[in-house]
Amino acid sequence: MVEEPKIAHKREIAKSSDIALIIPTFNQYEITKKTIELLKKQSIAFDIVVVDNASDDDTFSKLQHDFTDVTLLLAQKNYGGAGGLYLGQKYAYDKGYTYIILSDNDAIPIDEDLIESIVAVCDENSVAQIINEAEDNTPQIRLFHFLCLHRNTIQKIGLIDYKYFIYGDEVEYGLRLEKNKVRFVPTNKAYSHPLKYHFTPNRAYFEVRNELENAKRYPSRRKHMYEFLLTRIVFYKLFEPTKYKVLKEAIKDWFAHRWDNSYIQKRFDADVRYERKSAEEFAAMLSSKRVVVTHNKRIEKLLQKFPELEYSWYSRKKLFNRDSAVLLQNSYIKATLLYDEYTILSISTRKET
Image (cartoon, rainbow, N blue to C red; front, side, top):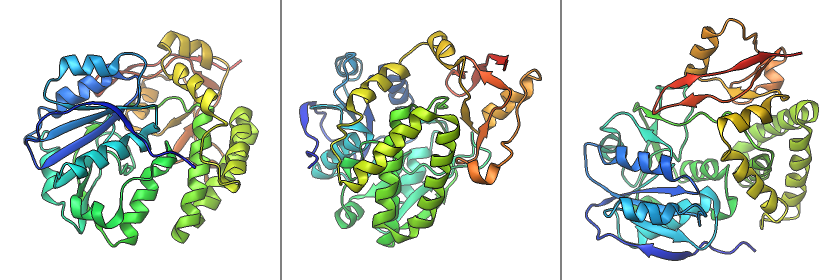
């Protein structure tokens, strides 16, 4: 049985609005700080609640020093994105907020009326569905990037399922909203989200386990699950054997109804260290691996700037299509995609030998 997330310490600010925006964080002080600063420039005022998933890099104390007008919740341990959002959502609901917005600590608003726009269309039967055309050629809806919920909606459908830890939690919540006939209102507002140029093996564990659970709960998800699972099994078997091993453990744990994350806990800590490496360290790690990169407008522009980088759509695109992903062939992305607030600055490559 997975324990319910608990708060170890909190620094509360007096409620000053009917709107609360929740962002979880874990060892990401700098980007969390930048996000808060930009959220404060929005066209309407609202309360910000940051949930720190027991960071070990002084994120909580630094935010406490920098922002005296932000509520800070310190979790007893790292409960993942799902657990962090659960704690923040429950806190805001118990405090009586009318509108509760769930987001990422690195989802940075571009349009200054973004929050005002999503609150305007939110009621107990409707939520805004942001279509972010700022970055993706085929805009992907990420539900937990500025999902605004009326408290009556939460009363009807419940809180986020914290046992998902990461990945699939927003899919489950979206399917739950659909099941309860909550309407999604298309809303064209721009925000920026850092490009993920890596996808560590242990994260595949949660992606697979949680997708299986979603298909079990919601019959409408089953067709997607079969295609998803076939894609991952074949792709990982051929190209990423470490992820293939992790995938098998995820399937095994799901069949055993095991949700304590015991298999990957130590390995997940290694993933966290992996993510915190510098660009130079990433360059060394990735120098001998194929890399799958999300097909993104910024990446597409970059590729056009580097004629020496040979790339093409994978020849069996229908089988290996991973959310419009591109397999870079005959080349490696050596380092990273380096970015400032919204713009990729550089990319380094070398030819395959």
